[in-house]
Length: 387
Image (cartoon, rainbow, N blue to C red; front, side, top):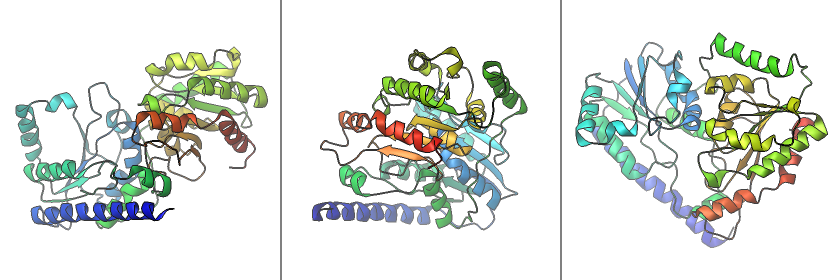
């Protein structure tokens, strides 16, 4: 590491501390500490991956406050986007989910009504679980919002990442995973955190649906059968490994190991799924993309050997049920932050590139530098038990 890069990283560290000092100062001025909150509001926005990574924090808050009423305030963005509603309905650690969409706050009057309705609940404690890239302006706005709804106490207004000197950060820093980083915020504010827990309300009907789906396709299969899940999609095009490479990997696994391939994803991934299995025999694959829900996908993962996926919510779904994954990652985020939680994963990641890490073209370049042979080698290691 050059002296210049060391200076850049020192500046990043100091600047984050400086911003968090002022956020914490305002928090102390605006709110008081309370010992035993009875009515807690957790604020965590995001889509599938964001919410999955926050689940251990949700459970830790519930275990620390077993008798409190706990509400999650969340938004996946626009209507039609997937998030907490699809993942957390019926879970034991929440009394209530309050879900809103960006369209619900697109006017001044709607925002005032939104705040007024929340204020009626008289929350004792507001817990902000901030986005990885939440900036000072956003978090300060959320402080004002928390004050406006009348919460007595609050914490979690913390900047964790900034985009300053991104190239130096990506090349030389290694962050804790999002799961661990959010739990650290709880620890810093006096909430005891035990083991990392994931828990979802997967119904018996959903379990039976997946069992029937697999049995119809392959009948009864042995524990020695290799079932590889593939997720080729993602929110951003530049985060996606080329689909023709996924097809080559699927063919490699079938030819060399007689593996069964399961393609997962949403309705937007169906065409990619059909492309991936184009040269496979009918008995070699199952297209589940667009046919099953999120919780059903999690149940399906319990039957699989491992997953191959881009950096997307699907890889966190797999990690939450203990399925190992081969993750194909770009330099969009700092090394480690959005890696799946757990230890038996293989993350493929290229850095030290000669381009601007903030440019989409450079991000795309970083993921295309991950070769087919890199992924084949990772698959071999999983199947031979070396990971």
